[in-house]
Structure formats: structure tokens, C-alpha cells
Amino acid sequence: MSKARSFLQEFQEFAVKGNMIDLAVGVIIGAAFGKIIDSLVKDIIMPVVAFLMGGQVDFTNQFWILRAPENYAGPRTYEALSTAGAVVLSWGNFLTILINFILLAFVVFCLVKAVNAARDRVMAKEAAEPAPPAEDVVLLREIRDALKK
Image (cartoon, rainbow, N blue to C red):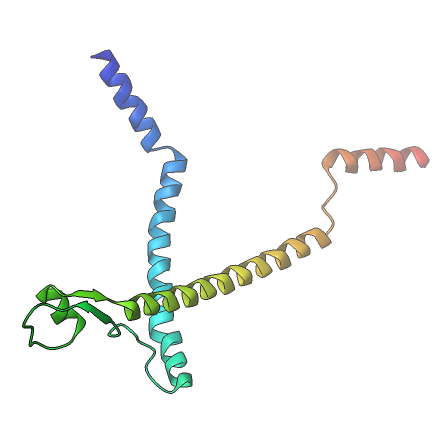
């Protein structure tokens, strides 16, 4: 019974360590941040790209039928063909996801670059300001000045 308690106690210490909590918070914030970036790409950037290109930049319904089911007379949409058992190469969906990924990576790169630039400005400002002298240095200066008098 002692080994089981020891194991459970060790697990409890592991689970509530600061690193685990930090990791959990990071995962939650990361998921929320991912949704924000996904919305930014899908709802703001892609419509602008579509407008600039003069049409919809959505290739999800572009595919090649490699093998259609025998005697298939239904609609030629990806969903209908897949449901009917056709072998469909959906290159358009892959291309759309690839474009979204490239845009998402670019947005994240710009955000990281902006955060790093802001951090560099703060660090440069802190480095430019002289650090106040330590208490012992101030005391030694006072003793030196008193001895000079």
C-alpha cells in the first residue's frame, strides 16, 4: 500500500508543478490564439486576396475523378462522389489548405517580428538608462567624499 501512496503522491507533485500549469495555460492560450489567427486568415485576409485576384480563391471543389462507381448518375460534387464510393483526388482542398497555411505562417511571422521589435525597444531603453548604484557603492562614495574633506 505504501508504494501506491508514494506513486500517487509523486503523481500529484508532478501534476501541480509550475511547469505543468504553465504548459496547460500555454496550450489553452495557443488554441485560442490559433482560432484568432485562423479567423484573421479566413475572414479578413482571404476576402482581400479574393478581391485583388478578381474572384473566389477557394479550390475546395476542384478534384479529379480517378474511378467513378459503375452506373453512377448522381451529381458530380466531391461529397456526392465520395459518398457513392468514387475514388477522388481532391487536389483543390489540399491547395486551399496549403494557401491558408502559408498565409497563417506569414501572419504569425509578422506578429512574432512585431513582438520582438517591441521587446528590443524596451531592452534598448532599459540598457540606455544607467542602473542606480548599489547601496555599498553609495556608502563607499560617501566615505571617500568625507575623507577628502
